[in-house]
Length: 117
Image 1 (cartoon, rainbow, N blue to C red):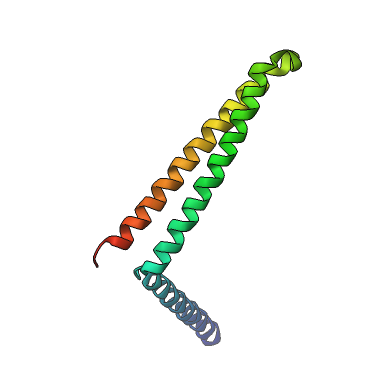
Image 2: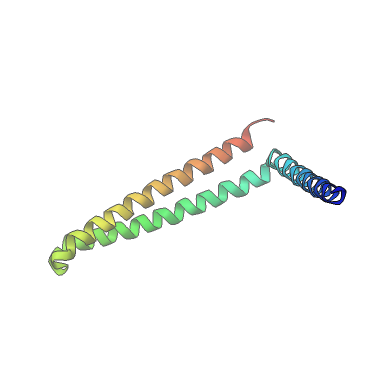
């Protein structure tokens, strides 16, 4: 009887000790996340978002060309042409919105660089 109680107490103490270590690790992770991003990091992020916006604009231009080709030669596509057209219009809108979002993020990071701390 005494042995069973002792084993149960040791198991409970083991769980408590392991949970306190997990809580300490979690606390350290949130402290690291709370640190401020340095200006060079904002510069890199702004450049990244600008590159992404440029790529999205290029993809949007490609979709515009495909739609122009469809409009010029719609008879090549037959019955499935309307699917082609709607698909490429949707992609065009998606790429344009993505380019706009990326440029907004780049502007935000550029603004963060210029703000005094």
